[in-house]
Each structure stands twice: as structure tokens, then as C-alpha cells.
Amino acid sequence: MAENRKSYNTTLRTDLVKRLRILAAQLDRRQNDLLEEAIQDLLKKYKKKMRQ
Image (cartoon, rainbow, N blue to C red; front, side):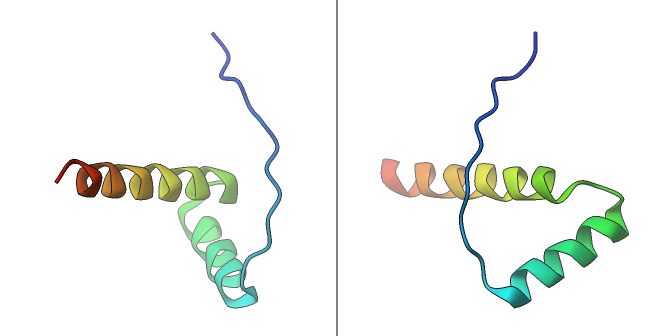
């Protein structure tokens, strides 16, 4: 089954975008995939904190 996707637009610091672009190229991964991974990690982090 295909994942549901939703477009989400935001602004980021220029230095973060540059570093993300470089990292994605080094890892041969899409920037979007790295951003989703980072958001998932952030949500896990705060879910743990909210339980405490």
C-alpha cells in the first residue's frame, strides 16, 4: 500500500539547508527522507519526555 503524503512548506536557516544538501549527497539519499527521519527522531524524543 502506498504511503499517504502531504506537502509541507516551511523556511529553514540557510546554513542548515546547505549542510542537509551536502549530507544527502554524501549518503546518496533524498533530502526529504533525511528530514522525515529527523522529524521521527524528534517526535520519539519528546514522546519519551512527555511520559516522564
